[in-house]
Image 1: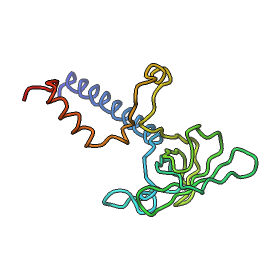
Image 2: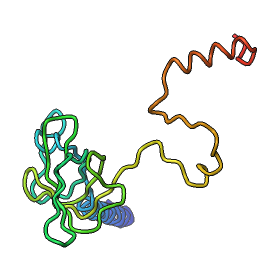
Image 3: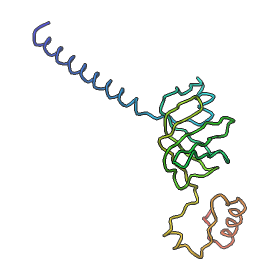
Image 4: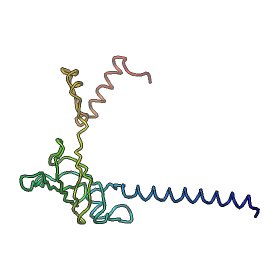
Length: 176
């Protein structure tokens, strides 16, 4: 190998090695910030076909419904403990110290982020409450006063069929 090729090979190898090391360091740093999402059943029974359980001490996010009657406030402080369930039989206990969101209540869906301290207990650093799909901004609600609003949860197929027939009779429908 002539000296010029040898010099190019060493320089190219050095650049590729540096890029590989930088990529490895970035991936290692990012792996510590990944929060995996679990449901209570996935925490207890395992996730996926391989039944992978989260490890104690791992940072995770858990989503589910707050079990009615399970919210316990400890002392006069901000420490709260409650149980979460999903469609399965498993329950996970969530401990949280802080101010809960205004939308938090029993039977409400929440997402909690924290560290698993026991196989079925999470020490949450953040609790987020989900809102329902029927939310309407106050300005829009004021503008629509007097107009009958039917929430999506109360829609029925009969209403659609009745309106569809009316459109055909009055000529308001599309040509078919």
